Image (cartoon, rainbow, N blue to C red; front, side, top):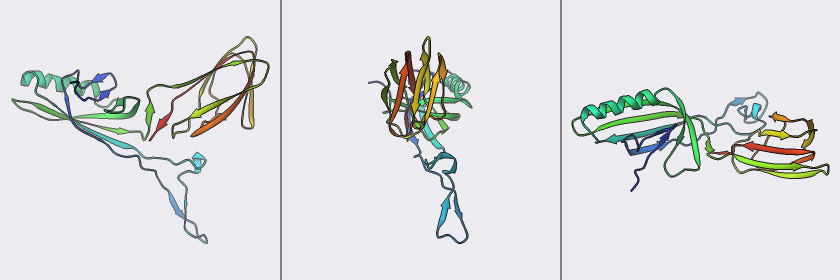
Length: 220
């Protein structure tokens, strides 16, 4: 049976001799900034002023405990040192057990608990962003013609994203999204007006060439 593990960047805890004893990731909590305005009933929540009403969330905390009884005490001490020097202080993508399709991103701290004659233990903590990011990016490939076409762009995640747009053409490709429109030559673009909130969106395109949109969905 394969040992349960956590992937901390490229560091595979099971491959490095550790057994995952326990782990917990705190839930995402939305943030509020309530302000009482004289003359108005109730309070006003200013936390979403800069996000067009989209909720904002605070950090999450990952706490994981690992144990090892492999090798001698000196060999386990070396394993602890390798883990500390490899991970401590770095911000990494973290793949948790039971969720191979997503990762969280956080800054790691390694704490040595003990290393006696029989076994050793460490605790890894991480202050993480609230999102669980999809391992695989979403990719939409379009072929533009002079006849105007409409593509459906889906964001099945919770976090709004601005896609990376790569255009290959010998002329121009025309894009329209909402009230905005562009005539673009070959190149790679991020257009702040193309924001994919949770749900379905229509992108209109025409011209000559190909359009590739990539974006990474994220859930809580």
